[in-house]
Length: 174
Image (tube, rainbow, N blue to C red):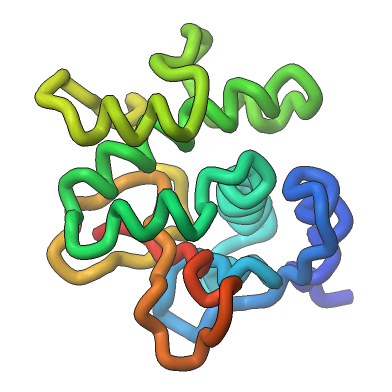
C-alpha cells in the first residue's frame, strides 16, 4: 500500500480548527498552504510530510496567516522571515501542550512572543530575532529574495488564488 499525504488530513484539520485537505506539492516544491489545503513536499517521506503539515496547519489555526498580518509582510522579506520565526515558534509551543509531535519541533524554552500581533511588532523592531535552532523544518518553498526559514510566508500574489483565502497561501521563505 502506498503512503499518501491525504492520510494526514484529519490531524491537519484538528490543528487548523477547520477542514483542510493535504496533498503533494508539485515535484521540486517545498510545503505551503493556500488556506484550504496543505501541500507537502512530493519527494519527502511520511515523517517529513507530517512535520510540514503540522507547521502549516498550526500557522493557519493560530490565525498567524490572517490577511491583515500577511499584508504587513508583503514585499518585506526580512520582516516576513523574522515574523515567521517568532510566530512559528509561538504556535508550535501552544500546540505542544495538546500534541506531543509539536514539542519535538521546537526548543523547550518559552516562546518569545504571546500573540501574532506581538510577533509582528517584534519582527519590525531592531531586536535580535533568531530562527529556531537546528535544521529548518522541511517543506517550505522559497520566496524570491527571502532567506531560508523553517516557516514559510504565505504567497498572496499567486494568480491561482482569488478572494480572501488568496492571501493565506503559505510558501516557504528561501
